[in-house]
Image 1 (cartoon, helix red, strand yellow):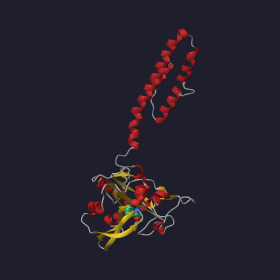
Image 2: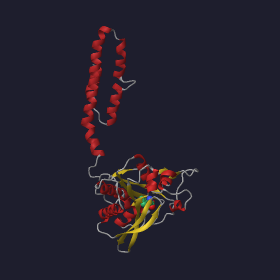
Image 3: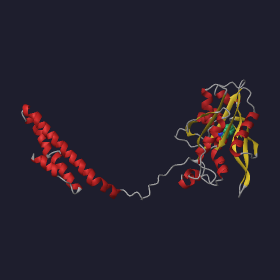
Image 4: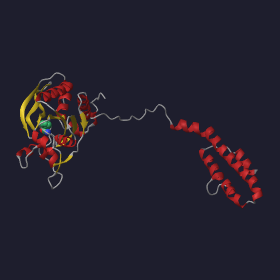
Length: 326
Ligand code: PHE
């Protein structure tokens, strides 16, 4: 009864009072009720039930008291003290899509419309996929066209110098006809400047079927350029690649406030029968075209950027300026 009374008259003035009250009765070691509960075991069975009801009841009362005092006296005050609704909220930075990714998505969509599937290949390659199967003769200067990063003292393992290696990987595993697009990073040991970097992106596009011709190649390239740039002038220049015959390079005519002129954006050609033979495709039945586009070159023209390094500095002020329509 004494305890009951003490509980009844308790009123907390400060938060600490309430905490003291709680510890006094319910504290883990010395709380009055905790000790009484421990004694329960030593009480003779016939009294135990009554005794148990009494202390359970007391415990309930203590808890009610704490709850009541808490809501009545402290919650409101705590809220008014800790929360100021006039303080501006913390702003959360929202990321944006990298311009190269925006272009990659656009190109994938452009080609999806004309039946090209999208695939990816590894950036770490071996010599066979990057050079030999593509008809680069061993010890031939054409290998030096693309300064290679080797990953090992054994010059078999390297960072791919172009996405044409994906042609080989895909053709080896699949039977024609197929129309394939692949986009990814390529690496060349070049001095970094406003116009070149040791890493950049290429889109590789190739199609194999019966009777694929050079005019199919031209039409596909014209479709890509028109989808990306609208009406612009382009020109095909004869060129050389070990894996295509005939081969060409494509230039685009650009105009902006400071400059105008032709800019080379891709290499292309009809896939050489020797390459088809390396991947067991019968060149008597099938023919195909391929082209490889530099994505940064396209980005430079579309966004009028004069330094390729900006794409890889990851300066948020630069990156935020690009809006994706996805
Ligand atoms: N792989 C060539 C390069 O990187 C481009 C290319 C691709 C040329 C496909 C012809 C056909 O320069």
